[in-house]
Image 1 (cartoon, rainbow, N blue to C red):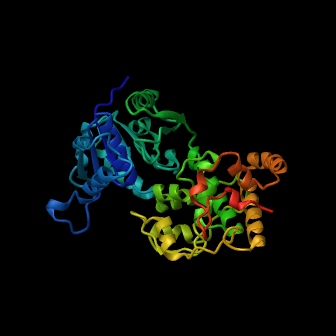
Image 2 (cartoon, rainbow, N blue to C red; image 1 turned 60 degrees about the vertical axis):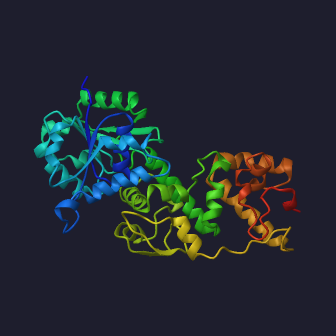
Image 3 (tube, rainbow, N blue to C red; image 1 turned 90 degrees about the vertical axis):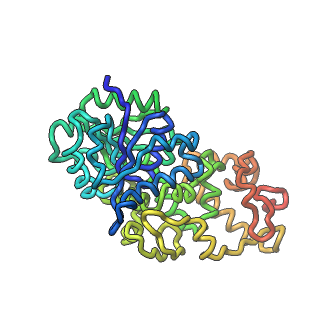
Length: 396
């Protein structure tokens, strides 16, 4: 079996730099390469790659097991250091989700890589086979997809997407290395749009946003309902989007809506026209499907925190409750909307909810809180701060 002693990561963005960091965690040295900044002087030609490495060193949660491991990552650029790819055993492409940009870079890589060197793409969902069309036979045999998830140190899943021409020996080498040295759980995926996790995740995110707009929920409402309360990670929906990056979400959503025809059309999951393009170009998103009312400048390479921006620009609506006002009707309508959201988003739970509701004489929203899933207790009432599910909020 082929042994992997040194790797190269092409692209020092959020994913590329953290993939290189995780190789360092396994004590495997790597080259981290990116473009040369426009009009850069000789001393600053590696500025972008160096910036990506610095961001990885400062990231929270930490990308490195310990800061000293950063010494195993050597930064460089695509113009001066591409010849170093002849030294490595595995090349991971992690540049922007653009088919032509990837193919253009890989043409240069093909000219300098050593025959037999494994080369993979970290694309979130572009067709793996299409990226390598027209390349040499040796390149295509060593080519397949390795989709890491952010942050690579903590996300155990690694999707591997072989093509019809992928050499079994190269595939086995990466599977063994990723399992034993990187600690990954390997899942083989077919070369279909967005593979497995992003196919499911994108559908789920768009469905959440659809219900959010229909029921006029806030970002905080959605994150409270789709986090630890229902057994999902505490990052819930919008904090996960912040972590992944709005630019990546835009690419993945576009890939699904343009290439997938077998999802449920009745859900109307397609985002508002032009909004995804604005995310990619870093333009203003006014009334985007991400928030419904948010208007802020989103930059593609380093997107600002969606939740923080919302808190500055979107006035939280008034929410009346029994302990801070007499508006029982407002409170009752809100409980009905929460029931509707949960029942439609989680159809399995939606079947269980009526049973619990009949027993407790309360809605689905109160059911999950009363049953001990009170992780959203810190959210509380907007007016008085009383935690949801407390005795002061009994529904008549």
